[in-house]
Image 1 (cartoon, rainbow, N blue to C red):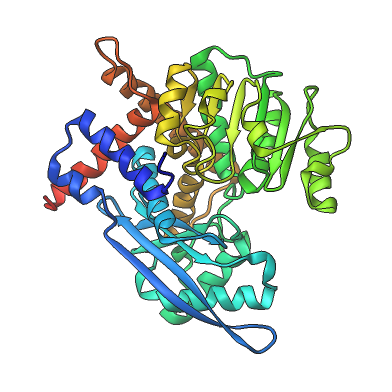
Image 2 (image 1 turned 90 degrees about the horizontal axis):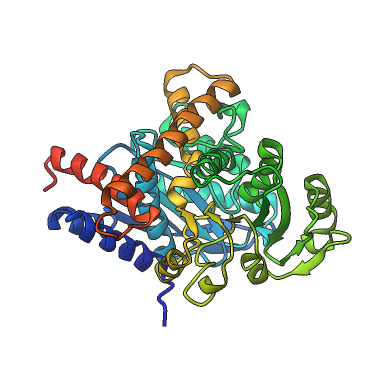
Length: 420
């Protein structure tokens, strides 16, 4: 049976790359595990006066290239292995983008849909008090992730600043503009993904105008991806889903109608005139571009044979398992790995941190221009590395190529610092 534990998947991906790279065994041993993992119990006063205890996590995977950087998830199924995997992927993501940050991640086991604003704020502030020695602008910089928002980031920076005794806006990114967030941060992950898609389409000679695109997920990343694919390229969004299922229309779906339906009806399947489909069915549609933008482990050894897209653009973290990777390669599907595709969020988070540290702020056009340059360079680096390692009729995957670049950069930083 395929192992779907996200951290063991992250380790397996590293192990396979290390073998191809002939990575030093000492470096490999260091990189297989996080430097530090913190688990905290968080007592929170609820609206009814009772106290409930939540469990939270924060992981520092590797800081050889700079302070740890990574989002915070509030999710009912959060667990330490998922946080460890995400912190590993953040390490590779920052290294691939060649920004001076390491990898970290955090999370709390909770269901935000069952918490009112009073309880959510109390939980957020209590989490900061529990981990404040573990975070900070020179140590570990948080950001939004699943079910966390700019408002939650504002509470975090406020609570951290109270403890520190001074304003420390650089301790958190993804903040509202009013507390010194960055222009362009809200849609950065999706915009970065669109830049990668543009380069991938050139590489594969795919005309994106009227190209059929299916998007799994309609949260911050998936929602913007649906909007921007049409806005940037004139692509046709034929299928979109949320956690309850999706809708399909070969003639194309209207972004504004999707937003209205989600807002007013609570689920995309209320979209009028479209065929209702499951998340599993969406992944297996015959499309030009498939964008998984939801959760991890969506394309596995069980359904990979049924994937029929030309380009697979991984905007979620860890949506494709190692078993699936091998099958997709056999079908010659052009897969673009998550820590390349969705790195726009951390790149603009880096820009936000830089602006906070300097006290000088950029216009949106400047942010997007700098983001485009980094995303384009990263894509070309991956393609060049794939060619470099593809010899004697064998061809490594784009994921392995991306890993080879990122792991090499982190390993070299550790070597020069004397870690091994």
